[in-house]
Length: 376
Image (cartoon, rainbow, N blue to C red):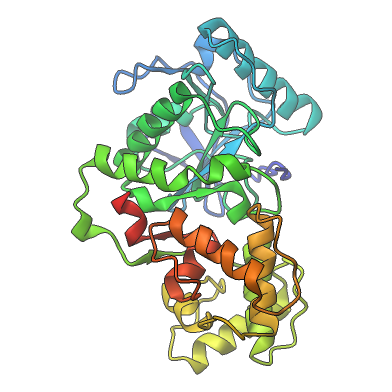
């Protein structure tokens, strides 16, 4: 979870409607020359703002993204699973996290927008995150996931959740926070992803990830979204600024179609060219950023089942292993262990556990949301 902080080039100045601050335009970033003290949110009084937990001033200018916020990315903090659920501990957690990110990672401020403690306290992370949540227009540019820092709201959850799941208090507050973010930024429950969907990491943890269908379903209910509004699939929209295991899966699938790609998870110039060619050949509008939209994914993934072999099976097995299916070996043969792991993934996402890897199963395996998962 690292990124260089943006170097400010102060060029065009204009007044931007967040507290009347004067901002410099840097590409698609609105850069505020300083961080004024902000009053606690009247809209979300349950979120503890930076001043209230004793945040240090940022080491650089606060940046407001000009991009459209299109998702929430959930993290675990890889901190100890403490049993101190007090408010005092939550405040110290926020200070410790900021110290780590500024003093060790070299970032200008806390990397994420918001933090949820194991006791269920919600805290502002990076300065102005609460202010921009109130406004619901442009988010603060953060440092929680390279390639997505200007597009995604990052939420850190205290603890390590590879084998353990978060306490109920944390999950309850996380659902409330995700509902608020969705409401303010016009997002949906299916726009919630995990860190490893866009970055090579063990975060948010295998055990926590298995709760994502439940978290999304609870957010859907809290938003009052009718089931008729749920899309068939919401894929991870990887693009040329993202390097991650999902990119590696796409590389396996493109290589199987004859594109000269080495599956390594790096979205390089060779992959950008391959994606553009694939989109053009399949009648899909060619995206200049090589974004994998639903049409691209739907056209790319093959149906797999008993007897399947080759690169697509390797791609499937690679991702199943990443998601904690320890019994799977990346052989390229669709064997019994692979079938059992696929059936487990299908059950998790509300799909018929028939072991057939169709489009919905692929979407679930790579980290997307499918309509049947919301019936849980």
